[in-house]
Image 1 (cartoon, rainbow, N blue to C red):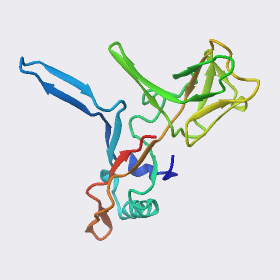
Image 2: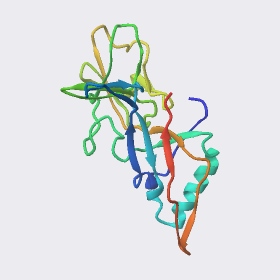
Image 3: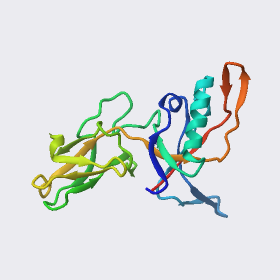
Image 4: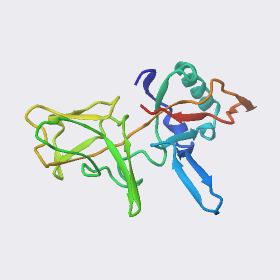
Length: 212
């Protein structure tokens, strides 16, 4: 991903952020009172406001330093979603069988990390491009695979099996992981309010997801 720095927004500030997924849907009201709905975006895009995470002058300076190092909106970076940052539900432990990421054919060695959101009515599969290294675990046919026989690329989320360990035909490949969201600042300006001598406040720090 061009124009991207593989660094994470300060975690203590991210935990106080608000926001989540956003979709774009066109709704046309018909003359008979019914409506037609059209999905303009194939994938959702996340948007956050990290301003509420700033609690002190030290926090304020950390944001300013991080903002300047990214050149404002110029370079993207990693952001930890306080709610959706694992292959499983919040509070659960990551497992090598959390997510299905592919099916072996005896030849394919590389598999993209994905996360599927589903219920009885529908599903959507999200590409996971920024896994947290050290958190990824992989399985083949429900059995955890030793880390020595595969590797994962931190910048793309692609799991690659070593020669001689490619999943055989019909073998289900699964994975579990923690992950960050690739985002950028959605402004080229940071407004600082020094409400008190020893504390500061930034009303809003808008962030928007960068889709590869």
